[in-house]
Length: 435
Image 1 (tube, rainbow, N blue to C red):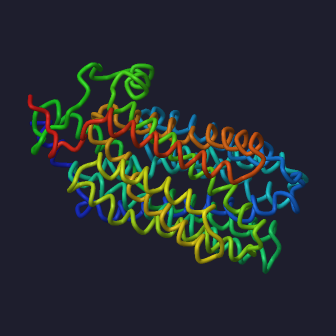
Image 2 (cartoon, rainbow, N blue to C red):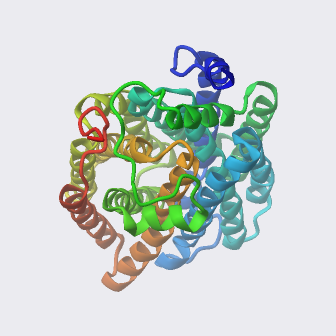
Image 3 (cartoon, rainbow, N blue to C red):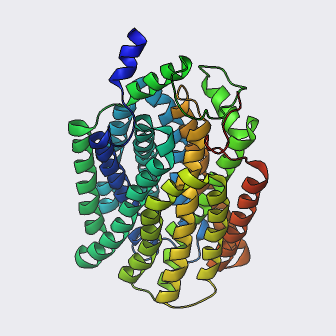
């Protein structure tokens, strides 16, 4: 009877939890704003404002490398920590970590301060973005996971795009440092206050779902959960499962890592490439913004679409389409052409990005779903760091930024091929557990 009463206390689905779901969407929008303020002004003015020598590709990529390794590690930590402290506390700690960033940008005497600020940004993103996604998955049904992650990433990357455009104009009107400081401080303060006032902890929903699974009370097709893992696995057990012991999880993790090569490219090389080809800061903001807007808005549809057609096809198509968009950048000239290439890249990202996370959620048991998501996000965001190092090395070896674009396009094609050959469909309705 106690189990039945406990189960009745927790209802699942977006409609039943609409208020809390909406608060989490606002939170991830703010998380997107926080990272978006680093994507236009900072790399474009690395040489003139922060003293990075022209052609210093590895130095230019240093702040993205730091961000990737820190965010990846904090994703890993956040998943395990949220199963002990709860989702809300981890989210708020993420906003506290971001508080010094606006002041560091304002007073930065050199590029090293920007790298240090990006380390704190990695802490913020690893804790806060992970929690907004995990919390929504706690609240929703299995048949809404693609839609849920699509909405989450739509809100986040819409924030990235908005921040890129707004900070480009603020930098022109107020100066780059002052504009970024005012924008960043407003974002962090509002988000932290809203977390304290309106966000609820969703860990009890995950615990109730785990009990329902154990009692055989979950309706609908059963997911093909990995069988070679214990009911309450430790950190290393989940890590090895996600990284190599389960072919599905491993292929998803490598795809997540490689697709971040594109984001590292767009973050640093794309603005520099456009700036060197004569585009203004406002123009760069709009072109890079197209990538973010198309990515963000399209996820509203592509995540839900994967709930219908499955995960594997959108992932493979997205990897290849995104890689094609990267190649298009260097095949033409002009703001209109670059905006078109950015749109192709953005739509490819919209196909693959929410679908990879949904695929992990399909086959991760609620008892260790937070850890699984954290480890997937560890590998995915490690792609920022690995991608930045490789892109910097390729550009240095082959004498130009263009080589980084070709390298990224090739990596996306190979990674998509691995998913095609190594990963089976994860959606429980399309590939249910026969037992």
